[in-house]
Image 1 (cartoon, helix red, strand yellow):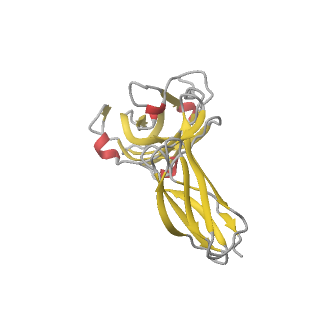
Image 2 (cartoon, rainbow, N blue to C red):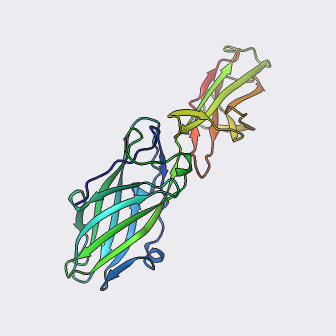
Image 3 (cartoon, helix red, strand yellow):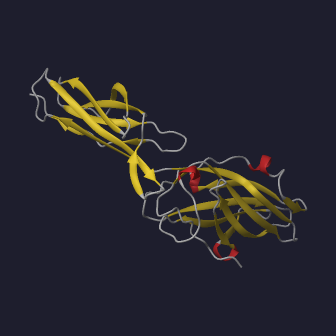
Length: 261
């Protein structure tokens, strides 16, 4: 029996943005017997899994399968990272719970953990890519189905974004300088590093409003820093907003209030 393994990320964090794909295409791969099918695979509820540079992050995987005799168990579920930065995490049938939805269909659920401080495994920043989610499910009549890629999910690098608007207070019509920084987890030195040459929106919300509007879009410099100027017009909050990329999730800075007099 396999025991759960935590994935080491060179002392760094991982963000897993999950994209659930249909099981039908994946069923052309690997092996099985009888009429058992994998109907659906959901990783982390279909939402991104974001991991920083220190804390382990656990996420649920749910595999729904059907057979005319009913589902007996899911023997294992595992995640496989991209080569050459290859790593795997497993959990076995002792950690997987199967619940019947009907006489023929069950959903088997377990938890995988990505631990940036673990001492096993190997990945670097190239792990911000598409991963495969594999599984083996058995039926009560001993039919089985094995898929190395029952679905796929994406690994992303956790991001942070700051903002500072000054001076505070400021005279109406004068210049406000808005600075900030966009960083993301670097899995090779366990630190957050600036995200270079990325478009970031400067947004403003009036004091009594609940809605931000975009003032302009600027790009981060070679160290991830942001800086631009605007004219002071009314009390309100400035923030930066980053829409994300395939390797890095979207993030918004908390609004910084400016008192205009």
